[in-house]
Image (cartoon, rainbow, N blue to C red; front, side, top):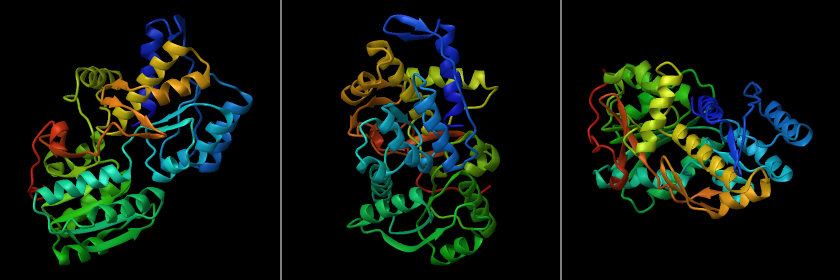
Length: 349
């Protein structure tokens, strides 16, 4: 939901206008796609072929932190600018790869925004679960740093393996401790699993936050709008954020038969495509020149300004969103909010 639909919509829109504007000359986009089977080695081999032997003009990044972590050094070696919309990793920033750019807000600003919101709304105790991989471990570590001096006590923290099928034992244990807030650094299947099983075991804290997938239309559909009401998660924009965001939201929903973009990475993906489009218009297909343009420009996008410090987008602050009346509203920080935070989650429906 966060990447492929955006790539397809972008190519269609560009080609409908006669093609991508390459320094004043329109060139039609031919998209070449390959199934990586969610296997990192397959992903690496595919990108190595695209960049090394096929020598395609441009590449669009794979999905997820792990895959991007694996291909980022390749992008740098072959000199292909990567604008990654679904990579969340401090380690990727620290690798200092000049051709690799991360569009999402990274763990530190995202967890800091969450803790700031909790502190401002009287949270005293919190429990956390996190997937045992790069994404989960980095976000958990950032959360621990953000909690220092906040006055918020972490009453339980547990990791779980990827592909987990049952979270009810840990959720029951957390329920017994009755925290004000629950935080899950979870992937889409686990986000839905944790939400369903929290409902089953009757765990309904004032604040319930899950990570990747909460921003998806799928989450609202599976949980129902009433069931999703009040749930918090990683999100940063919606159709109210800007006129460009509204136009993008409507075009996406129309093209894909009512399927909406997610309210987090989809917007960052489209912002990356806007940046790439503008770069090619300005400097053509010289990939070093594209890289320099991306690195040294403050970009106007549908999610607001994007500016890179090294590999990191430092212009987009950490954000928190919440399901309210069927829309995933930005509720923190207040200056970016599209709705006011509901500080007392209703009972699961």
